[in-house]
Structures are given as C-alpha cells and as structure tokens.
Image 1 (cartoon, rainbow, N blue to C red):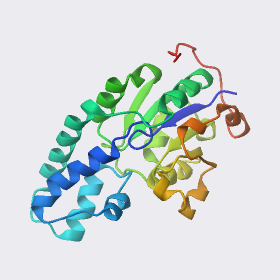
Image 2: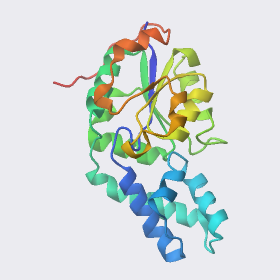
Image 3: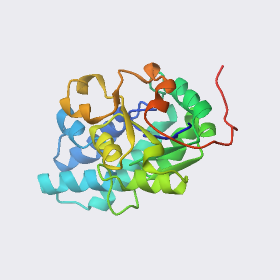
Length: 229
C-alpha cells in the first residue's frame, strides 16, 4: 500500500543549518549572546519564534524579539540563494514520489523560506503541498503540524511516513502516531533518544522505500510526479 510521506526541510533535504546558524550569530552577537555549537543544536527543529523566545528568556536580552526573528529570517532568505541539497536528498524525494500516495514538506520554517528553498533546488516539482508550523499554536516537538498536514492530505497518522533529521522533529512525528525515519547529523547519531524512531539512517542515500509497506497502510495516488535520471 502507498503511504503519505512528510519530509522535514532544514538539515534534511537542504544544507541550510549553517545558514540558520550564521544568521542567528549575526543577529544575537551584537545583543551579547554568543551561541556555541551545542547551544545551536539545542534549539534545532524549533520554530523561529520559539527559538528566539528560548534565548531571550535565558539570556535576558534587551531587544525586540519580533524584530530579531524578522532579521534572522531575512538573513536566511539571502543565504538560500546558494543552498545545496544534502547527500541523497534528490534520490530520496524522487523514490518516495514514485511510491507514495501524496507528499508534503512539513517544516518549522516560515512558508516563504520553504517555498524559496524548494524552488531554488528544483525539488518543488515533487511535492503536493507545504506546511509551516509558523502559525500553529505549538511548533515541533508538538505533533500539530504533522497531524494538520495528514488531515489536509486525507491520510490517517498510521498511513504516514515522517522523515526527519532533528530530535524535535522525530519527537513530533512519533507523538503524531506516524512511522518515523530519522536521519540525524553525524554528531547526533549516538544520541540514544533517536531510538524512538522506526528507522535510523546515516544518510538519505540509504533510504529504501520498499520497507515502507511493512509499517504503513494507504490508498492509491495520482501518479504525476517528476523523476530524476
């Protein structure tokens, strides 16, 4: 049976985490907050408003958090012009497009960032929809964005495959009652918390869609996807 596949974006399909990290350093540095690699990792997968609130609360920054968020997003949009795909991303997306009922990107990033990234990399032709957690009551690790995406695509949670890189995203997918494929960064692969995922891969190059049938049930789809040579 064919599942509905829900992809995260940042750090999974595109190598944008360095762009986000640089943008946060650019904005927070002048405010007196200097984020280490460990601090950056702690908020990975969160919506920008939640990330900004996290650091404003902990560092007692004297600035406008809304303005800081807008500056970070603007800096990221500038950096996306040269963003590159993560290894295996096009292979994984094309393979899932051939075998899924429907596909969407479900991201904590603003919709403008999602669409700009997909357009610049050419991945937009593979997806039926994009969903941003930006306007949800709660962002990841809350499951709301994934549940909303599934409902919009006419799928039940047990018909969905979530593919994520961050722990917050994995938690969101598991909490939604979906099958979760985790593709953590190399530095995070030893984190035992990723064991809650159904599958843990080293790279999207290792994604084998033939295993999906063992975990989900689904209906037929309208086969209209693009393909890669």
